[in-house]
Image (tube, rainbow, N blue to C red; front, side):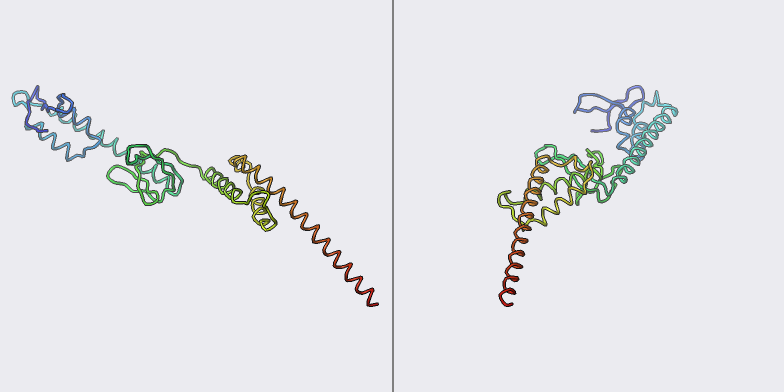
Length: 240
């Protein structure tokens, strides 16, 4: 897009074939101020002064107004950038979900802990597992209590599912079942709210079955001890 263009009423008019419209330098300044710096603005201002109608020059007041308008927009952009950086910094160490775009253009949600925050220009980025994501891609911030509860529920269900079929359960798994019992009893009501009901019911069946197996093993052990004592007494009587 060339700066060599017509001057109308002291305004440089540029043609944009992409949209088939014409816009003045001042209009372009308003639209692009968020992505321009002072040097870019001054270049546009010089171009406007260079190509203005010498018979109807733009007044100094209008130049000042344009510069004030740009300065105001630049200040707002800087403020927004600082707020984004502060918001991103507050997320360091927290578990978040960011929404990115996959290779095929589909939406991909990534969950992870924010390791650190970086800034490039006016944009703040969240660095998660070695990759950076714009703060604008932030979808959710996960509460630590919620994350712990979900993780605990997931681990509990996985441990239950690793147990053998109920009919093949033996006392060899008593430590595993006891550990599940300890974990379940130590859970708060909030944490138990995230447990899968099927996993809980399955665990209770295993816990009940293990009690039966341990009770039967104890009875057998006591019976063997009684038999051994009776045998010892009979041996002593014979010797006497």
